[in-house]
Length: 320
Image 1 (cartoon, rainbow, N blue to C red):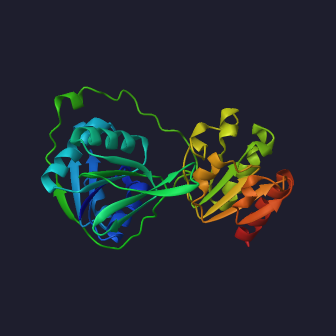
Image 2 (cartoon, rainbow, N blue to C red):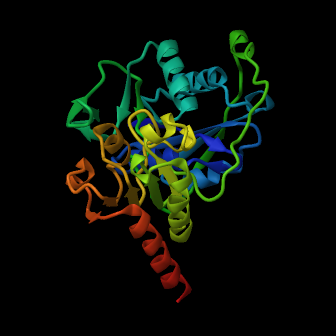
Image 3 (cartoon, rainbow, N blue to C red):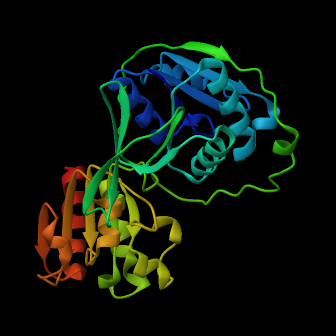
């Protein structure tokens, strides 16, 4: 089965989410092909080959430099038409979601979103989608082709196979209406360390910290562990920490190897965003906090005492 995977990039790097989806598509027996769209992106094709792409379609043109969805819809629609691909997969992001929706409208195709798994059964693509606040999982399908899917962030890890891909240059031709939008300015938030979506370790703070000034406890532990800082919705709504760090149903979905929750109660909305973590450690003074029901390791205690001691021990272990 011919499957296209939209590979989003920031700067000169392909995003982890798209590479994970590409690896998954290749693992289920599909002839997976990556699609890279932008300006000066030709060198990224080799990277896609390492993660399972048999072929990489590269649309490289100055008019594609801005991360706008409509020109990408034009490119993808043409590739689908020329290759007769039966599926187009996207790793969820703002740009990918807009592009997937536009492509579905252009091709009059079905789009399943927020999928956490895909599989082939009797030759048919089947998706798995959480429902009822992730308390159940439902199989979903499509009634026509191409089948479009938007995959939840962190669902699949990239798996390097060391392969190489055939590179196919795409002749870029944009519709007139696709060139009317202009990006006036693009700002990037200044930050240190890895993003919460790419980090192997995430240390999250909740209302149990007591105030924004106490987020230094979380920051110092995250720094010692080489991880990123996350926050709950209550915290960001209160203005204690930036919205870009929010983990949960209305924030970011993360799946680090280690997730340390400091003063986080563990409401279902937060659980949705971090339940894919490898190991979950909860530190909370309330022994009845919901987070202890799904944490792998729980520490009942005052975070103002436990977290500094933990940071000290981590630092000592690293220096030793």
